[in-house]
Structure formats: structure tokens, C-alpha cells
View 1 (tube, rainbow, N blue to C red):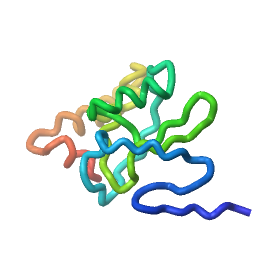
View 2 (view 1 turned 135 degrees about the vertical axis):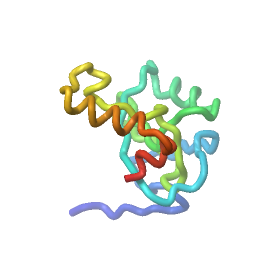
View 3 (view 1 turned 180 degrees about the vertical axis):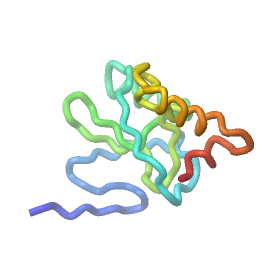
View 4 (view 1 turned 45 degrees about the vertical axis):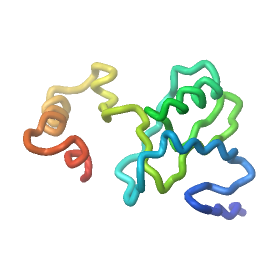
Length: 121
């Protein structure tokens, strides 16, 4: 039997989620979700990530520590700058086919549209 998930004020209220919301990384109301970003930090510890969030630059809505502890670090109804501009995995791994590169470049370098408008579809 699945446990009930409770959301309150943009926070997930659950025994397995620790509230570590840092308003410094929240960048305004989030009305629609365009993507889910999953990435691995280069930080040695969760504490290192929490400290870096204090600058207010980048962050994440949730952080999962090496021991499996789940921390909510931004409210889900708030924007959060995770890792900067979105990049394709094949670009990062240098494994894109010619067709993939053509499609990516057409999207990434489209003239006359802001970055956010190009990724709003």
C-alpha cells in the first residue's frame, strides 16, 4: 500500500524527506515544469552542496546524500537554477550523431528567440 504524499507550501511533507529549504536558491514562482534535471554534484559531502547554495547562484529542489537521505532544498513551486544552460548528454559525451548535432545546433543557436523561449516546448 502506497503512502500518502502531502504537499504544504511547496514542500513535500514525508518522513523520508528532510526540510533544508534555502530561499537563496529560489528564483521566483514556477507555474509550469519544462524538464526534470537529474545530475550529480562534484561536492564531497551534502554539507558542501548546502554551503554552495548559500551564495544564491545554483541549487536544486532536492538533494540525495550518499547515505540515501533526501533533502528538499527549494520549494517545488519556485524556480531554481540547477546547472546553467541545458546541454544534451550526447554533446557532453561527444557521442552525437550528425543528425543529432544538426538538430541540437538548430535549437541552441536559433536566432531571434531567447534561450528560455527555445526550451519552452
